[in-house]
Length: 337
Image (tube, rainbow, N blue to C red):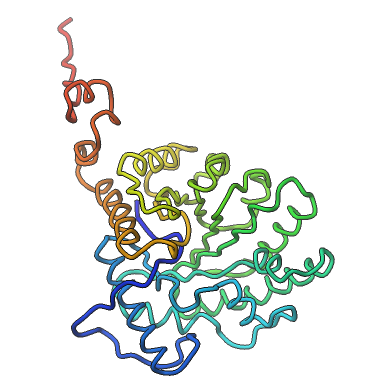
């Protein structure tokens, strides 16, 4: 059981005091050296906040490239895709040297990039598959650099629907993206809406090791969760990134418990996350979201009964609700024969 970000966070106040690594120019950030160093400090602050909240794997907060889709599309050559050098390796390396926690790297997937390019259907197919092949080389570079987990954001999967051509394009693009990529954990993330109309056979075809589903903007994604094979992980995007409201431990615990129950998956293959990017929230709200998912992950790893005592008794069972506190039923003693 673990907790991680499902997307970006707003800029947090930079940390003070000595840092573990020195600032360096050229970590994939646009702008002058001074601007890059400022981004370095924001990334450190984002990582520190995640560590303090108990999250792992952590991310750079998505702070270097506010429009990640446009940035990835441009870095890959736009409508003439081609890979010439590592794109996100320097960003990941900087984040990885700033913490002892595992650090994941997020990339925007080829299906989403292809739709963002605005090409016609015939041209878009060729473009999407070209982007998939270029990104395949990028994934290999990240794995070679030591990145333990790559999150592939395919938010446009919510637009596939029942179209046979779109389903086929998504399946083929994911196969080409992951072809021959070994050694790292590849995780598919679908955020911002429901993708269940595309069908489980479409979404779960490629050999991803885990899936992150937005269950706030896309509650019907639960239909996909229940079809994820038991040997693959599920990360429930249950902390709503759209609102500053406290999600509450009870909601998060329900989502985790239900995902763990599907196909006998168990808690070892379940994580909890924010549902999407939190760039529309202020820093305080984002930190609250992070603390809450970190707290629920810690409670799941604590001794039996710890989680139940932390929850509203009405969310546990009728006996606890009546007592107003966690009140487990007394153990039954064997009756004498």
